[in-house]
Length: 168
Image (cartoon, rainbow, N blue to C red; front, side):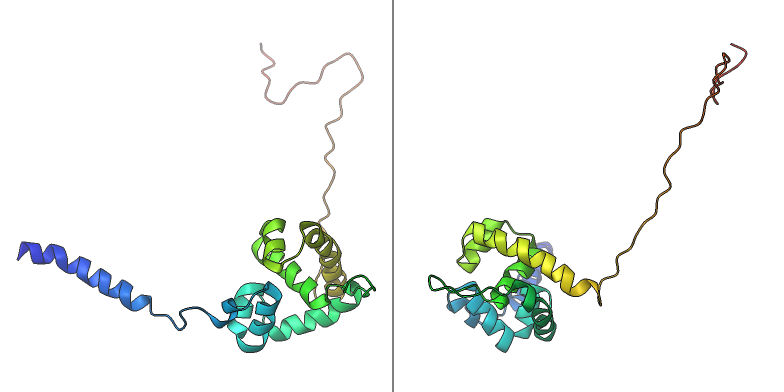
């Protein structure tokens, strides 16, 4: 009976772990495709909860933010290269804000160069601020009073310090 009491909690714990790990997919359909932006486009359309986990915003909010930011981050295509679309620029920026990952990690995930990701962030972050500050972001200004040291007399008498003992 004593051995059974020791083994029973272990068996119950194992059974609980086994029921908690049932999966909906063996490999999620979005992971099967290559390229982070391809996965994000698929998440945007088919898996809004996964999209929210990844970007920390719902697809309708993303679409609204993209409309606001688009004029500030859109680049022109050239005969030598196609510009990175505003949608992908915003994906990169949101991923950086959501995770705080290293730039090289984000660059690898999106198949972009580190310098390219850095340039996207330096352009998109101010653009998000500009697009949102008028209607959505309130800037709180804290007014501080400058510290003024106590004034001392100019005569020969030295000021007494507050915690000094005049009897010494």
